Amino acid sequence: MEKDMEQLRQKVLTCQNCPLWETRQNVVFGAGNPNAEVLFIGEGPGEQEDKQGEPFVGRSGILLDKMLAAIDLSRDKNVYIANMVKCRPPKNRDPKPEEVAACIDYLRCQTRLISPKIIVCLGRVAAQYLISPTFKVTQQHGQFHQKNGIYMGATFHPSALLRNPANKPAAMEDFFTLRELIREVCQHTY
Ligand code: URA
Image 1 (spheres, rainbow, N blue to C red):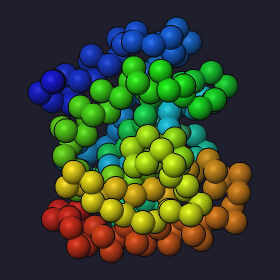
Image 2: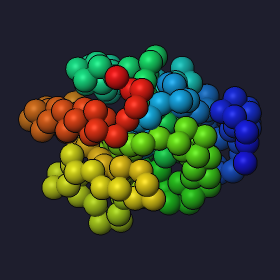
Image 3: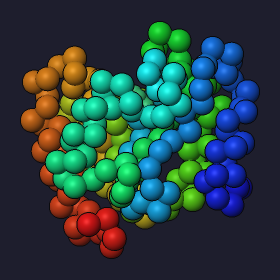
């Protein structure tokens, strides 16, 4: 296991563990404060993320940053943002199980290095892999349960909110629930 995030990043930047490396422009390793108590996990890079090498920098990222700001969170300050897979799946398709399998140790290593108090899955792909294979975001969003000492929960993926803005108020409620949980279990986020 790598001893710090920079060492891990250097390793991931040259990864060829699955075929996604052949079509990527950039590896999207993750961004934020490596000492954050709150870790957000998305699905995988989209077009803009692949171009820029940063997670959530396209339209969905702008929305995510706004929702974070509404509860005094920011990737520059007090959260870390990562993805299930670090390279863009062509045409933004879901990552294949074998691609997730090839990449998941990087996320595990990031999680160990960060040692978050709370993990928020953004959307179905992360929630079904990390919380439960039958997880239904529309029914179970905003519920946080402890798993191996970490509070785990999920909310709507920002891209899903752009497609279906009717769910934005429910998603915002999830962020307010998260704010309460942070106040309860985190020491230095606020
Ligand atoms: N969607 C994701 O799941 N992750 C990103 O980094 C960007 C869009």
